Length: 152
Image (cartoon, rainbow, N blue to C red; front, side):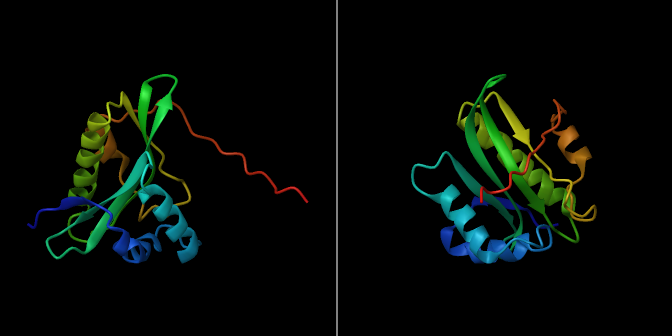
């Protein structure tokens, strides 16, 4: 079985990554994705985007992260986007991304990793929670969001 390799997203691959995002976020526009990716990849950003690929450099998944101050854990790796899609070895793609997430957290001196997996993702494309649990991720609560209406 081929080996998955993780790599930082090359800015020239932002549109290729968008194609991967479409099944997971069908309402995401290419412009919104480009803005989001460029902000995370900008010099001085405390974040980034990591892809998982096979030798042919076709992306099978990615996650985005920010290193943020955390009240409970001093410094945390905040992961708000995690997608993996491989028809033959979905667990391999997930595991490669999870291992890289741990490496990045340690590299930045983080005391915790917080992952948000949105409920709006279709069940067939949502990563298996068992893969996260097997790597030591445990629930600490639930993330909530309040949508605000723009002022008139």
